[in-house]
Length: 193
Image 1: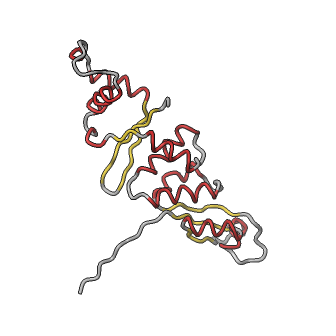
Image 2: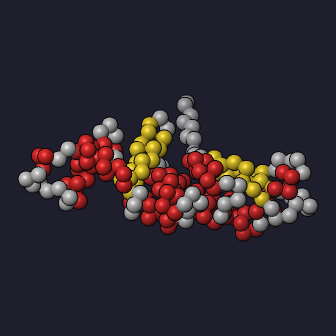
């Protein structure tokens, strides 16, 4: 009999008691998005530490999962409601769409923690390159035809240097490279939306 094990990966944070940390003790609890919301309701420090001398000061000691890419941007004291919402978005979708959406929203709105709505809007604007990974000119050539910037049979169609066109278009886009497992995916966002 063989037993199949399946590793379930979820976004987590290590929520710590700042009072204990300042006293030289490392007191923390790993929390997923649901546990974080429960902790917000009952008191974050109370859900991590039972020592009576600790106040209400908390800090995030570590991030685990895809959300960890943004730990230096989010810092130790982010907006916890927003963080829980972002953790849910990333947990709900197995691909890297929302990770790229968080990055794009941060490009648009500054490097602070974005709202879930800002991330959803950014995801709607993402340009997935897919099969064009090796040759970006094909991506922008198809983009020109799909948007009507170029039409089939136009007299100037054969004169366009698509390589140069792609280089010009990249001035309006930012490239986000997402590592997911063993493969890498390039996603382009319109920087001047």
